[in-house]
Length: 219
Image 1 (cartoon, one colour):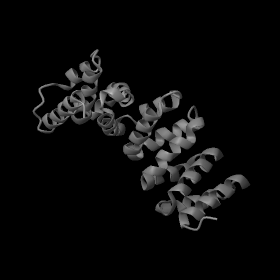
Image 2 (image 1 turned 120 degrees about the vertical axis):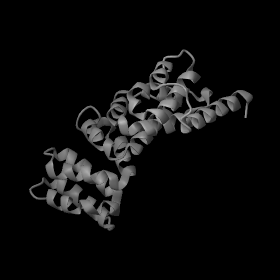
Image 3 (image 1 turned 135 degrees about the vertical axis):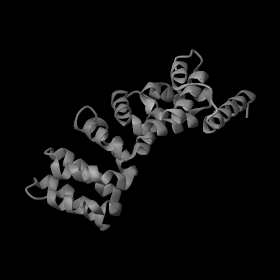
């Protein structure tokens, strides 16, 4: 490993030990101020520190975290992705908005956002469904993979869509996700069956396909 990269890794390890021991001298406000430092490495350290010390301040650090993920020369892509995962439960709406709005970002950037949304758990589901209803419809499949990877944690909000949402397209989307989750989504079976009552033939077909997959007997 090059000497500079070794020094950087050592700096990050020391910072994490300091934060874990509660011995870090910087306040949350000082780390937030460091997010504007001209040195990208200093900005990255601020992201890592805030993820450990004050993840509820996620919205102030998301852009710098994603910048760090994208800058391979810093050698901090993995710590930045871990920081994003810690921020995610406090910033699911912002992460979804950023993903929907920024179509030209790199693959690493997209993977980091989607991975963070998986870490956000059930809190990300309403944000994803809201995006799919509107400006994020074109990214529905990518966002759906987050729901699928979240597995059983996605089931209750998707059941709510089947039972309460009037939009047939969104019901079909919820059915597709539940079908992809498979037997781990068995709690959704009554809602899938109930949604067939009075539904159009196309939606009924989607619901039947999802039920088959959830039962473990796909066509």
